[in-house]
Amino acid sequence: MAKQDEGPKVLAQNKKATHDYFIEDTYEAGIVLTGTEIKSIRQGKANLQDSFARISNGEAWLVNMHVSPFEQGNRFNVDPTRTRKLLLHKAEIMKLLGQTKEKGYSLIPLKLYIKNGFCKVLIGLAKGKKKYDKREAMAKRDAQREMERALRERQKY
Image (cartoon, rainbow, N blue to C red; front, side):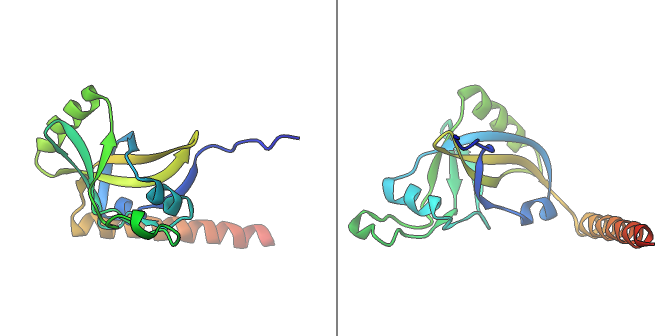
């Protein structure tokens, strides 16, 4: 029997992004990589922490994403935190450019995954959270956890 494809394989995720930002909208973008970079990413050696996307000269760029050098890459390895080009439609880039000009909005990578053999990045249009927003979200999450725990205890008896 043939193995069923469960969908995209997530290789790296920015878990802190949902804690630090309100995600307004998401976009799927391709990413331009070298041969040794994609091999390293497929091994799961990528990190999206502290990375962000920027639009300049009508092109989208992913800044500060760390991809560890490939062990067998020798001279073909490149700088681990180099700026990488994102592949988006022109209309999407113009829309994102207009939205990021607004105060407080930025582009944050949320996930890095393989889809149909190509590496994709899920970019989120995000607005930063204030400290009290973060506390409120933590309180809601703790309350939800308490309710689920109480329901489990109740179902035991």
